[in-house]
Image (cartoon, rainbow, N blue to C red; front, top):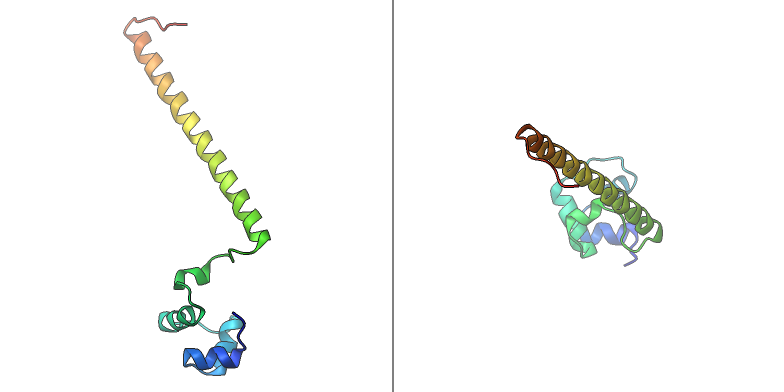
Length: 101
C-alpha cells in the first residue's frame, strides 16, 4: 500500500501535520491514533512496533536472534541437568549407594 501523507491523514481523519509529526517522530501518538493508523494500513496495532516481515535484513536479524536464544536455552538446560545430576550423585554418595559407571 502506497499512500502520501495527505492521503493517509484523510483516511485516518487527522491533520497532515499530525501524520508528518508521527513520521518524523516529533510527537507522542495516542492509542486512538495508533488504532486509526493500523486500521488504515489493515494491520494490528502491535505490528506497528515490530520489524517489517518482508525485509530480508530483518529476517536475517530475527534468525540470528532466534539462534542465539536457542543456544542460550540449550546452555541453561545443560546447566540445569548437570546441576540436577550432581545433586543426585551427591545424594546417592551420602546414602552409600555407588553410582554405575
